[in-house]
Amino acid sequence: VAELFLLRRQLRSVKAQLRAARSCPFLEPFDFCFNLLTETGTPDHVAEILIMRTEEQLVGMGDASPVPRSEALVELKRQISYFFLPQPAKRSRRKREVVVVVGPSGAGKTSLTVKLASHQAVYRDRRVGIISTDIFRAGANAGLKSLGKILSVPIIEVRQVDDIARALTNLSKYDVILVDTPGRSPLSKGSLPDLQTQLAVLQPTETLLVLSANMALEELWLFTGLYQGIHPSGLVVTKLDETSKPGKVLGLVDDSSLPLKYV
Image (cartoon, rainbow, N blue to C red; front, side):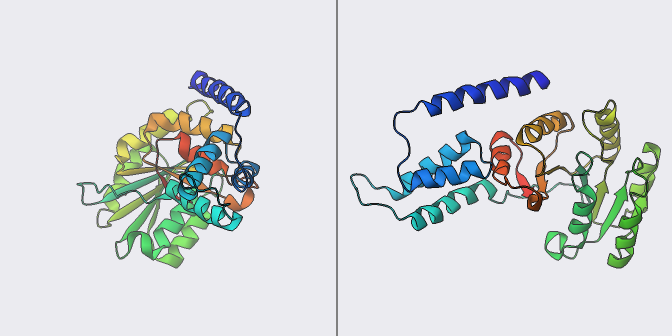
C-alpha cells in the first residue's frame, strides 16, 4: 500500500509539471475560479477538471462575449455539487441493518454514531440500538451512555470479540444496529487485523470510513488506501470547520472509489 501511495504522488507530480507548462492558461474569470479552488486546498488536477467543465457550460462556440465572474462562480458551484450527488441506497436483503463506523482515533466516530442514531431523517421511525467496541480509550463510552439515556437508545458495551454475537442477539428486536469501533491508527500493528476480526462477527450491511478534514490530503489518501482491506462502503468526512483547506475533500472523493455519505 505504501508503494502505491508513493507511486500516486509521483504521478501527480508529473501531471502538475505538465499543467505548469501548458501554453494556454485559463482566462478571466476562469483563472480567478481556478486560483480560488487551489487556494482552498483543491488539488490542481481536480481544479482543472472543474474549471474546464465550467468553461464548457458558459462559453458558447464562437461567442466571444465576456462571462461575468458571478456567473462563473454559480456554474462552478453547480459543477462541485456533482461530487456530492446522493448515492442510491443499497438495501440489504437482511431485515436488520448493521452499520459499522470505522476510522483512526480522533476522527469523530462516536459523534457520528450519536448523530446517526438521533437524526430523524436518517432512519426515520426505525428502532436503533448501539454497540460500542471501543475499550482502548479510558472513559470512551461514558459520554455515549449518557447520550443514549437522553435519546432512549440502548447501548451495549462489548469488551471482547466473543461478546459481539451476544450483543447482536440482545438487540435482535431493533431494526438498525450502529457499531462504534475503537479509534486506533491503521499504522499501528494489529489494529486492522483486530478490526477485521470484529467485522467477521458483525457481518455489516454497511461500513462507514470516517476521516477528519484536519488531516493533510496525503494522509487522507494514505489512510483511505490502508482501510481498503476491510472493504468500506462509504466515506464520511468530519471537522470541516477545523481546516482552512476544505477543497481537499474534492481531492479525496476524486481519488477514491467510495461514495461520500456524510460531511
